[in-house]
Image (cartoon, rainbow, N blue to C red; front, top):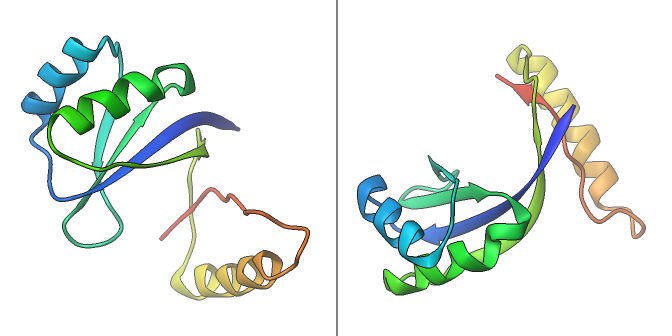
Length: 109
């Protein structure tokens, strides 16, 4: 249900063509550029084996990426606002447990 991806988040909006040139130069074959959750941020998803090449590409553009591995849903499920809020409350409670590092979900609203 999920793909494991490297997630490189940077402050600022990246031009996709500029990133493509830098990625090719660094030897990165494939990536996906999306707008970040926070305003004026960008997220680059790539295969875990290419995360160091993508990091080099972003650094060559003068950016400082924050890198983490994430599981990205292959089949997002749309839920109502109320269901989303209820589920997020449950996820927040799970993340507060000492034994839980992170919780992934496939909800969209």
